[in-house]
Length: 152
Image (cartoon, rainbow, N blue to C red; front, side, top):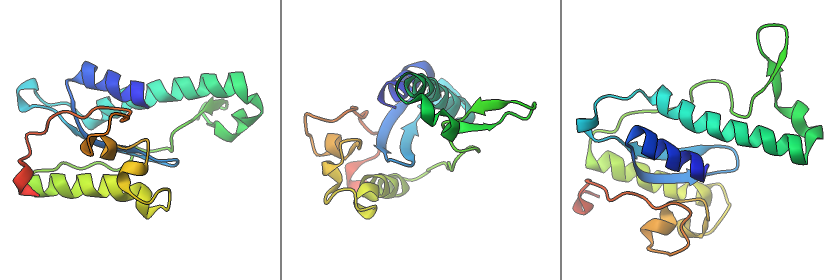
């Protein structure tokens, strides 16, 4: 996920404001500067999901081929296909205010705590909470946000 998000940032001109990679799902708060023009969410999701799916498929085939059946689905053409991600586009929405952005960041950071995976948001290795806490072991650096700090 880390390299897929980094690649999507470069490819699509995105800023990463917050993230958490959970065992069963992912939360990303991304921003695209208006000067770069419109970009549909499906294009961003496709670039991230395809990259991760290809790597996951290769890893499963090489390391635990007996688990391949777990990821098989009907491809609609009478055959089978490997599906790493849940079917569907996921849940996305636009955020228009600094308050909504900060609310989303708090929700993202507290997700592993709410799921009982850690005691504090910055304890979860796969979260931007570490970057926000200025720890040097964050797996991804976020971009400086144009959201004013006093808008929390």
